[in-house]
Image (cartoon, rainbow, N blue to C red):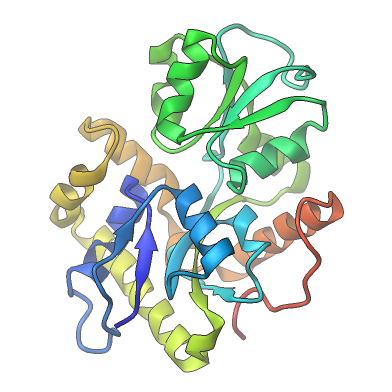
Amino acid sequence: MLTIGFSPCPNDTFIFHGLVHGLIGPACPSFAEPLLADVETLNVWAMEQARLDVTKISFHALGHVLDDYVLLRSGGALGRGCGPLLVARQPMAGRDLAGKKIAIPGRYTTAAMLLKLFSRADYEMVPMSFETIMPCVARGEVDCGVIIHESRFTFQQHGLVCLQDLGAWWETETGHPIPLGGIVARRSLGRELIRQIESCISKSVQLAFADAGKSRSYIKRYAQELDDQVIASHIGLYVNDFSQELGKAGIAAVGEFLARGRDAAILPASQREVVIC
């Protein structure tokens, strides 16, 4: 059986419901019980142990694991208007970050790399679990925070203001949609099996869209925010056509993200193919 891991966030549980509940059919490879963990834990597992056969990771982490993993064309989170937000208690200039303590949802998240690309000021990055960032900013334990996932819809409830939409900055800077996270598979699985896995995840996305209600209880079992409207907004923002198939536009966006990371010495150089041909 293949091992698999993804996050407990609604976009991932929505995407993978069909796959993990055996709804794809006999053409789908056998998977063990999935491991659900926050994306930074998945990043570290992939980078330090290559622990799982198939796993969700941040595109920042992807730049570090290309010797072991290849990106799948299905199951990922890319899009427009869905990037991380830089928030604080009070308005300030978005790039005026020198000397600030900024909470991030993990060192190898796309959010952390976007912050580095956006501002090269001398600030301190403070990694923590994404769900703790808004309360920490609100209590004044850090000056700012980069928030992801459901937090995008609830930060104002914590009395916070948005200093910069980092995804919007990326879109303006590059013209590409923002690549947030993708699904990778071990290169050692071989092209035929990797293609099969890609196809099954794509079918799982199709099934999720065809009957969204079927996955509701599975999604709510793991969601941080249980409000139905928040969950629906989350899925609507992060699951789209790119989740079913990256396509040329998605692959180009990932390529640009990795190239900028290498140019900024955030990512190591690599000649490995990102997706299988």
